[in-house]
Image 1: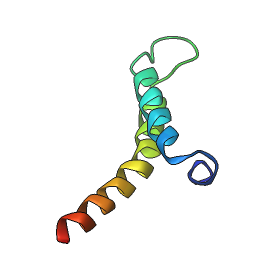
Image 2: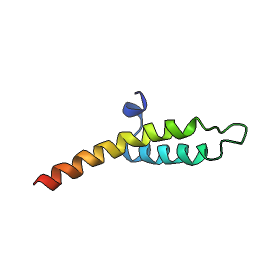
Image 3: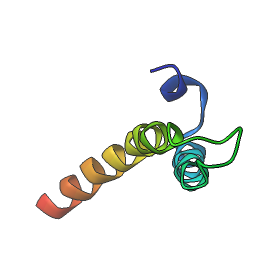
Image 4: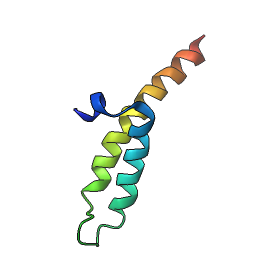
Amino acid sequence: MRINQTVPPGLRLMLGLVLIAGGFLGFLPILGFWMIPLGLAVAWLDIRAFWRLWRARKRD
């Protein structure tokens, strides 16, 4: 995924949340319901990394 390489980690989570929020306004002309799964995918890139870090600390 190209966004994984071009957008900094903290900003990816924020971008994902903005896309999800915009998806809830899908009835408007430019925004659409397609933004919800895209936002989840983008946000998951950071959540996954945070989850791995959390599990690694929990083991120690």
